[in-house]
Length: 298
Image 1 (tube, rainbow, N blue to C red):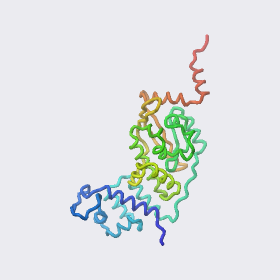
Image 2 (cartoon, rainbow, N blue to C red):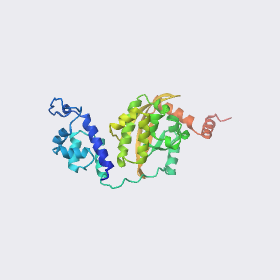
Image 3 (tube, rainbow, N blue to C red):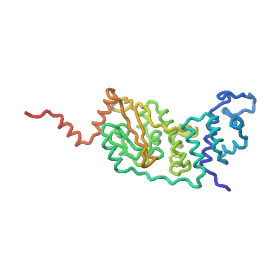
Image 4 (cartoon, rainbow, N blue to C red):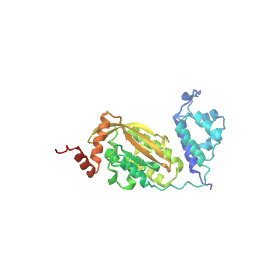
C-alpha cells in the first residue's frame, strides 16, 4: 500500500472546508434546484468547471492523492476566493508535499540574551512564543498581566491550551470566542510545517477531548497569521486594560516571536500598566524607588 502524504491530505481537507463555505450564489453561478443537491456548499464539479479541469482530477486533489501543479493551485485559490493567509497556507502545504519525511522539530530554547532583554523591559509586558504557541519565556510584567506563568508546569505553558483549559485566562477576555478562534486559526497555520507532528497531534487531541468549541473550529480548517492587534483585558485587580499588541519574528529561530503589549500615554490603560509594573518589580527595586522618592534631610 502506498503511504499517504500528510501534506496532500491536509491540502485536500482544507480545500473541502473552503468549498463548503461557498454557494453558487456567492460566485454568481447558475443553480440547479433539484432533489439531488445535498451539499450546502459548492459541488466538486462546480469547482472543477470553474478551474477548467476534470472532476476526477479535482476529486483526486481533495482526496489527497494528487499534488496539483502551480497554475492549477493558483486557479483553485482564485476561484475559492482564498485570503492571502489562506493562499500562503495552501502553497506551503503543496511545497512541503514533495518532502519524503517531515522536518525535524527545532529545539525549544531561548537564548539567555533574549531572556535578559525581556527582564529589562520593566514597563512593557513581553513574552516569547515558539512553535504551536508554546510560551518559552516572559518577563514579570507579562505574568502579572496574564497569569502566573512561573507556577505552571512547562507543558501547561501553551497559549492555545491556556485559552481553552485555564479559567483564569478565559476570564481575562471579554470576547473570548474571537480570541479562541484566532488562536486555533494561528495554530492551524503553523501546523502546515508538519501536520502529523506527534507533539501537535497530542495538543490537538487533548483540546478536542476537553472542548467542543475547539473540535468544531479545528475542523473548520481556518488559518490566520496575525502579527498585531488590540485586546481588552479584564484584569482581576485593575479592571479593564485596552492594549495594543505586536509580534516580531526572531531571525535566529523563525519559530520564535517576541510579543509586546503597550498602551498610549495619557490613557487609563497606560497608567494601569505602570501600577502593575510597580507591583511586579522585585522587592529590592521597590525599596530603592521608595528611598529615591524621600525628601533629603537638611
